[in-house]
Length: 391
Image (cartoon, rainbow, N blue to C red; front, top):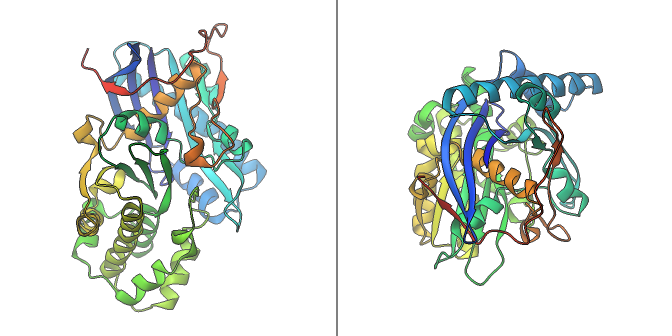
């Protein structure tokens, strides 16, 4: 089965698209990477997304129009990806959509989560079924609705002899811990690129610190670092999840007010050190021996240097998911392609020990393609593991 995974992360800087061929053989799910790419939003859409995310000021009309416009854009981006990196049509599209609000109460419970980008527009454009709106069923079952990539992480690391972690450095840092003989757990550690991007945008107008050059040459401000680490979210017990609703311009301004007079490069270095420190504390607490990293943060030299120093001191080695054969920039798009495969075959995509739901759930809404919807008979259980296949 050939599936196209689509995701726009909390940074809203474009859409990651990944096409995978999935085949179940002898209990293992074989995955061949057909191709992957990242494509920008059409002009103006990213700014509209950020306006809703950061200001929380979007009206019902704003969100309604943005929902449809994002759906149209997802459909066009999917078509472009198929022409550019695909080799023939796909059987299914799995679209995460764009998170515009993740409503976390003061006690850590989730009141709701909203991902937009009308899947009907994708189905209309491509003529194939679309699985979307993955998170809300887990929330309805009492879970956080995030993170959901642990299904992919767990199957990639199944059978590993040592406790290991998969860390994604997007706007938020999320960690999956796979430990022999123990339940897989996962949660959001805290901010990663979200605050770094805000800081560089406020200072220079640039969307991000290219290559992490300014982050790498800055010096950590101990005063500001202490303020950033004095954050109740960082010490809250999982399951937990967060987003730009917490780690936004207001959060950053409040921190700077408590430790002012920090130059831009030093601010970036301190934000990277804080993000790395939060991850290191979680990795040490869970006793992980190796961490594979993915996401846009792998390209920030300052953030990765801070992470390697901290994890090395904690006795954990660091690599990227490229070493596992999964491209670091597109791991989450492949993860949602896998979630689409699970849903199509009647299998749960959430892990309740990760999200805190009352049990695993089959995730998402399926939108028919051009013809009638015909699902296969549900499979009795998850694959034993995922293995990269070249054929």
